[in-house]
Image 1 (cartoon, rainbow, N blue to C red):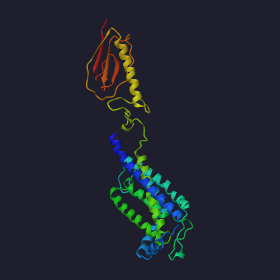
Image 2: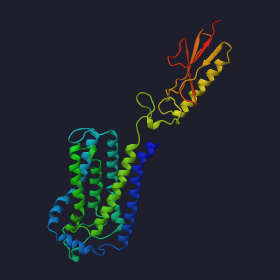
Image 3: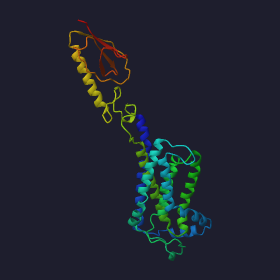
Image 4: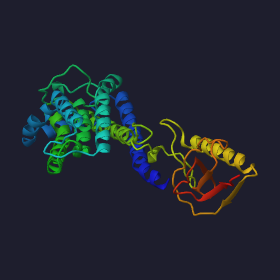
Length: 344
């Protein structure tokens, strides 16, 4: 119980952070929808950014990384996850792979949400009439910036799950490169005059919100156990064990509830013991043993008329339940309760 609570804490923290950012994103979108760009300070900030010569080279490097290159990278990572290999050598853990699969699926679904946001807010893009340089003319709305939103969502998710498709020595360089891209994505859109600063801010906020949603879904989906309820050896997997504390039992067929199997087996064993104890020719001596925690065996069918000698073996697996096994001609090697029929 405590271990499960500890595992769920990061998931709840991610969900709470996503909800907080979502509220902030919605509030910002409502404000921009009521007062379309440019808002106060947009023109001055855009002119300052475009006056910095070093940012032009950064924009030439970062702006082409949005859009089609993102999809190439996403599907390349997906191919590595399917193959179970990492670029640079090694193999990721199974849970890490599951979480990365869920993250990729969430990223692909959320990547298209930015177009709906643009239509809902309806904020215009920059125009040369405001005294700024516009070299990237588009006919869509500006808020939030799709380039910034996509960079934060896609590259951010890949940086978080870099260990799922990259070797250890490649993870840190990749994350540093992602950090450079994310920091420079906003100014790069201002340099070419494609967005107002408020559009860039919306891209960062909405992109971070979508990223946290994707990470929450990935963590939730990766921790779900979608395999068989019973392990290959026939024992219940720990995550599917429904036996209360202090009770022990063996699993029934796959898909059978453990507590139901225990109750049925105990009832059958109790009925058999009652029928045997009612016979005057049976004398039973039961000596108590410490709980062994071993799985019980189902009561076997026997016929007293066809077998002159019967031994009944039972094992006490907890202080609350007695599980019995009836076997003809021989005693169980783990028998702790012995019943013997007197010879005629």
